[in-house]
Length: 605
Image (cartoon, rainbow, N blue to C red; front, top):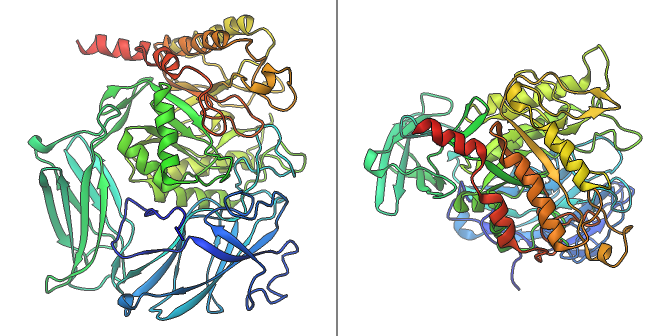
């Protein structure tokens, strides 16, 4: 029986020995969350589920769309005999939301958060072990849940929920003294790849080695004592004749091998990785990649699938979404209200596809009657830090944004929203000094020193061509320091704009579905009125893009959205990834030179 999603789940820190634990697990729904009292920890479970797909999905074999306050998993695994004497690490790439794991009846870890990985140390286990997992996911309290609906059904831009395990489960052996996930930083000005390497159980006499290579062999080597610093660091200097920048036109990657060596020169632990030599800088209102202005033609990607919900049905499906986006003329994406699988970023690195990392902060919003934007908790910052740490080393990632469309009521006192916005901004700045940080996408900018400023601007009226004239006017004065901002009940939610790089990070969302063509305008939705013909769609799409491409003070845009998602049918592609339009024509509309790129060329001549 083939194992679903059996590819290596952590491609930027890869060891040779590992075992995928996806496939059939025992499973049971525990709606009253009384399973521990009822003995579910100690007995076989009633159903079977296919991991890593969530029980709401078709691919799981459960396909239960109702609320599930808690779910249980159970599986026996046999530790390979060749792993004897090593510590066994059990990894969960993601499980939603409060997860507890027992091994042979002993609790080994608790983790809160539905989008980031966590690890259990099973000790020097041998033989057969029984793993039991309980995941609690109450839909009512405020918590980071992204676009998961808190109602029974999909509505608006909220979709089917994800409960429990939804990314790969796997295990690997590591020595007692071992490498942990490194932080890899490119330094383009000095032609250096900088490695910061945490070590578990560091002991005297150890040394850290690293080797950078390309298709022609070794490019650079470095070695340092590992026992002098809490996390040893070393620099890999790239000679001028082997210097090759990572870019969207040429996503060049170096291979990286990291080794931990004892006093006798024996390799204790080693791992493979990769990196790209790439910089991100701000120059006035421009964001530069490798000191060159690149207009960011981004698309909003929500990462939902009809059969897998948040989980891609295959690794190829992850890559295919990027290829579809590039086919339509986009060079990157806002990864919207979801922490995408690590392998998505792996494919973005290899394809030269820019991405902005975003935290799935919705779930504490004023869009449901019993919550508002003052219900954020410390869990939001903790889970954001986990995402920042996981994805730091990917060259395709060019910016961070912790919050989306936060709502701010006009009042004189400092609120919880002010605190959480600043905390998440500072967390990103502290974790990563190499990329710009946007404090909040659209709506309430509450951090005066935010690196980037933006707005969301959809045309929702019945007359698109009247609306487009107002749209042009709203974005005509960026060069004068006057930008469009989102209002709430007629009042400003944001602190004043202070000439940061500016872009419209959500626009478009043009409604197009087969139901509308058949006269059904109730079973789906998009922004504004639906075009009557394909030709009308192309004209609207070009008119919207032209306003932003022709603005010499706009560094990019983000079009809503890549695919339809459930009832929100305003994608370039259908939910099952079929083309709605002539992608070559969309590509031609988007890929002409933007004004900010043209102006940059003039100044460099």
